[in-house]
Image (tube, rainbow, N blue to C red; front, side, top):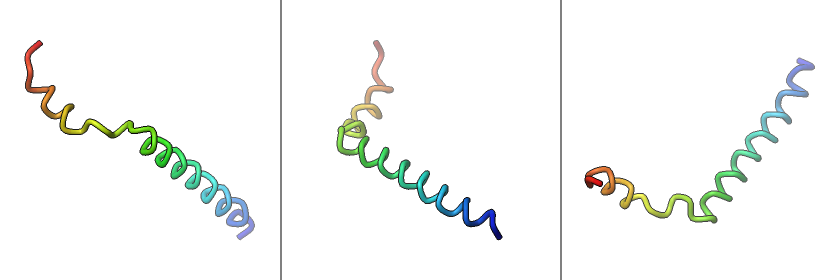
Length: 45
């Protein structure tokens, strides 16, 4: 049971870091051109 005292806060901190990284990528418009990538695969260069 003593392990849970360490694992629960560590998992919450890592989850918060992952959520913050996801929010940062959304706000910096890294997912902006979803349809362009889908159409670009069909074009010959």
